[in-house]
Length: 192
Image 1: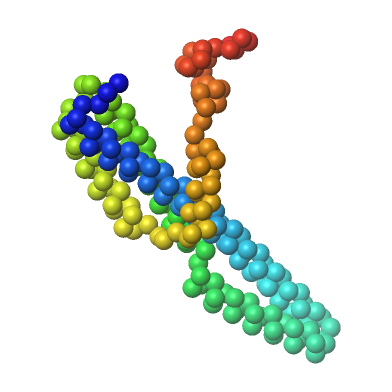
Image 2: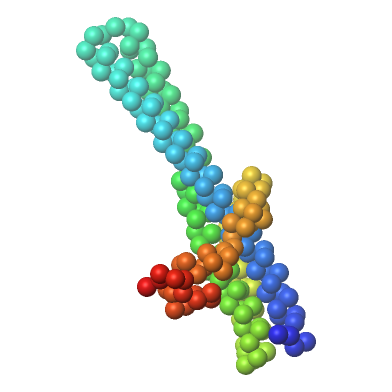
């Protein structure tokens, strides 16, 4: 199916934006996973420091050895120092920021996919397509404006996943997710 010449710039722009949004969405998902791992590590360190402080405080109170008092003070100081460090680090907050950005980008990605589809439909008006592209471009600009920065590590991971086909499905994979009546390749023998 050919696209008329007036729609071609809209389709080309929507496709370019779609490609960029796919990468941005996946990069924010990967960055969220990175920060989730950091948050888990921070929580484990907090648990260990608090546990050791408590253990040596109990030993100090029960047995009153000097070494236990010294270790209690050291672990208590380490716990406070780590809590101060963590307050400026905030991996959970960063994880949540990337999760929100990824969800916003996912919504825009799906809207761009619908716009690309509409560009191929003969009854979609040129003005409607132009308005949709304009609205989506504004929304995307707003998401990018407030989205947190991502790391090269997250981008490399996203790129690897996208290029390995992680993002797409074969017809057979999609068919297994659909009721048999809606499958592209029709019902398989034994389907109910």
